[in-house]
Image (cartoon, rainbow, N blue to C red; front, side, top):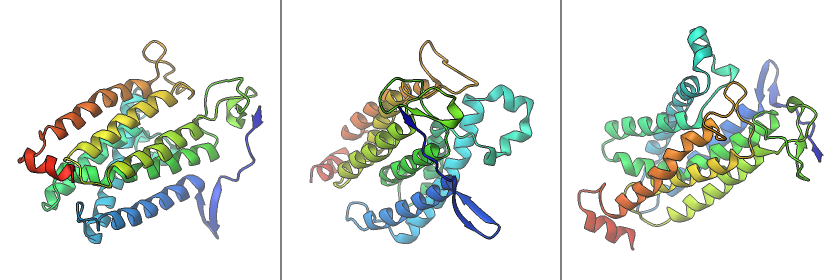
Length: 273
């Protein structure tokens, strides 16, 4: 059994300005993702200018925040927010849903593609998808530092006593998610997207593997206190991940069939180069 390390949740302070680790790691992830995407954008099969990458990151950031908040309100605590509608705007109090954030990112990429017609919608999703695990991984580390979203009670040797989780040792599920949704998902997508793929294939890979990894990690994660288990032994995170596990392979299959391209043959030839 391990004990939660004594970590100061304040990552940076300058006079009256205080930035906690969660905010600091999100800023760092945004910078890393932007720099990496600018470098990847120079690849022949991507061909993204730096200015467009920065614009896209702005759209994605706005979409993720708005979508994440709306998703949390709708799926995780709707009765509370219906009774306290003003609290819907209190993002600083916490409460974000990845699945809602993902929908927000999809909408943001659609809007971006409509305004920047040299970048089609699906290739835009494919371009941004490999960078998403950077924010996911560092976000899970921030959850660990903040003593939140810990796992279920466990007798495993590496189970940890979290201050907010009571005296019983719990699984460090935040670290599981850091490794699965952050490190492993990043490696899969970075390697897969190094070569040209049919439009929609990279995004489909993201949807599939995130759904799988999140579904697995939820077995170790403590269900949200206001919801508990929502469908038999399954959590809301698992229920929302099932459509991703189903949709991901369908999107990949359809992409390789040329279903998202006006000229399927040329797309598949490019994918095999």
